[in-house]
Each structure stands twice: as structure tokens, then as C-alpha cells.
Length: 221
Image (cartoon, rainbow, N blue to C red; front, side, top):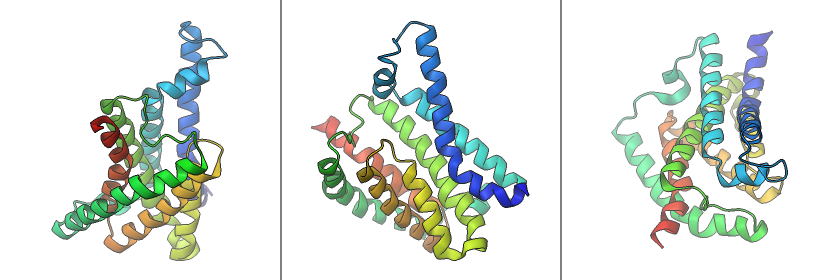
């Protein structure tokens, strides 16, 4: 029974881990008097690095545990050593997608949802690198690694790609649809790259580049 449920459970472990870590951070802020009940949400939004990084790392650990229970290694999930061709594809893909995303897609999202902040303005560069790196490793392992690998056998390739991309889209922060629409589109792209090259390194490099480029340009400007 658990073997049949694990691929579906994996689709919700990231948001559950993030919710748990942010809840613990909120309790800690309230217990130490560093935030009032009215301000705790704004405090966490301004300083999300520690709880977000912890949540993503916990999601990765749980996905790794699920994979071991199914007899899958990290290499089987897609974290095998990339060859020269995969490295070139990753470099080419990030050089194309990162500017497109930064100057076209993210501005469209922000126009539809003015609260969207692609630059993570309250976070330092070190904090952004830490948080985004943890997010990329966890999200690629969970959605394009474990869940996609297991659900292909049950739903077919197209069904698995749609299911994992929809679940990934629900993870996008906020309650508005524009960031979730972006996440859905990126989930489809990342899944296509994963299936095309047979490795998570290509979508992971594109993912990290797309996440960090707005922050780097904001700091440079």
C-alpha cells in the first residue's frame, strides 16, 4: 500500500515541509519576543532564508528516503554525473532561458501580480544563493526525479509530466495565479529537459540560473 502511495505523497512533501519549518520559525520568533503575533508573518516574509532552506532540505531528505524504499539511487533519480554533452546543453539552455525569463516572463508575472518579487529584495546574495540552491536540489529531486520516475509507469509520460508540473505549480508562493502559471510552464520545460537528456543536472542548472539572475542584476544595478 505504501509503495503505491509514495509517488503521490511525494507531490505534497515540499509544501508540507516548508509549512512546518515556517510554523516552527514563527513559534520561535514569538517565544523569543522577536516578533508580535501581528508582525510575525511580515518578519518571516522579510527573512525567509533559514526556514525556507530548512524546509527544502527536509523535503530532499524525505524524497531520498522514499527513493531508497523503492530501491532507487540518486543516479536513478537523475543525479548521475553529467557528460560533456549534458554540460553544454545545460549551459546553452540557461543562456537562452535566463534572459528570456528575467526580461520577459518575470515582468509579465509582476505586471499581473505587483506583489511578486523576483529579486528577493530583502534577502542578501549569500542568503539567496543558499535558499535557491536548496530549492533547486529539493524541487528537481522531488518533482522531476522521484515523482516523475515513478508516475511514468502509472500515468504514462504525458500524464506524469502534467501531474508533477501541476503539483510543482501549487508550490509557488502566494495565493495569486500568475506565479503559479509561471511555475506550471517551468515545470513542463524542466520535465522536458529531464526526459530529453536523462539527467536532472540540465533542468537544475536552468532552474538555478533563472532564480538567481534577477537577484544578480538587481545588485549590479
